[in-house]
Image 1: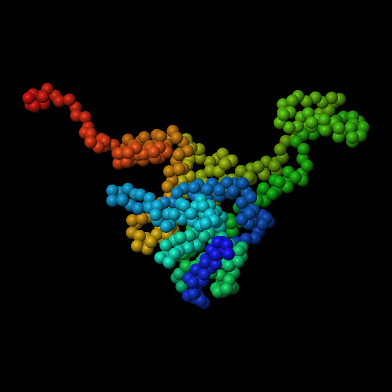
Image 2: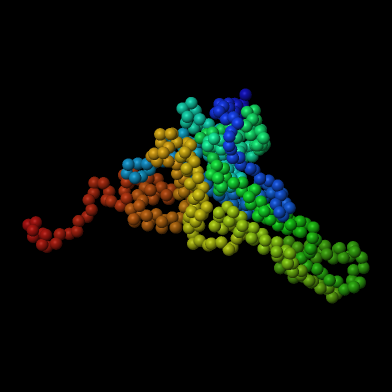
Length: 430
């Protein structure tokens, strides 16, 4: 039997062992997965929304940047600093290997895509006999619903791939695994009730549908309108047959079409005239509409600006732009991930003490502009906020022995230079 089948069976047995106490709930809340058509008449789904280039750009930018950052378990030190606890089981899952099929980048990126588009990114936390996390297994949003039963949060996971939970069979022992919230890493988008994240595509179906309709309309017009860029008018009787007219057009296109023929001089004889057709009002409206779509999508995903949108804020450097991206967009997602990992991946005795906590390392995002980074680290060094080795680390250099705690004081074993003695002090010494 393959390792994948064994893992699936072990996962199913674990789910069944954890769900023996839920029957006939008195009250529950269940999330609704949206779908259907927008007011524009087009069908809106995950694939059609991702088919919009601005959406693809926004989703891959946010999910990719977050997935590429280390999410470290850190221990606070008595002197006020902190160190990475690499031996922590949760740290290994988030930075080394979450499961045998995925890398940490792939897991975090996948959960972020789910959270950005469908409001919920989930991964089942597999634990050993000691309760320590030993694996993170992603759960597809369409296979899971989050409910509240007797003031307890649970996740219903469908046993059939690609089948969303149905309310009438939501508590069937044979079709669903019921997972307590403590064993599900759950990254929510914006939520109305604090139990599950709102379905982004369902709520914003009409704005997405407008973008899809505009894109489809542009493609259809380009394919079916047959509108030429220019028209050549010939005097009556110049071409005796359609064959002569076709040969003339073919020769004209051969000499003037393509990048290599750009700028060549054309010659028309016998009273022929060349007329260039201007862009129509409907075509201009399509172009303007697509510009507004970029702005709308940037607003939906919390981006300060998006490629192709010239109305956004401009920045003096890459570092300044990345800082705005972190503070304006990624910051809220950092908080969601860190708080969720602190609640579910830390041992119970450390969970509420704050002694060990999870924290994203955003340093890689600030390395895009070496000049700005050099100026930043110089100022931090002058204010004794960074040691020499911390500055070297930020620039990718190896540490220097004996300088790890040097924040501006004199090197060990040496005393600062004393000013020369005044004549009065010299006479006193004599």
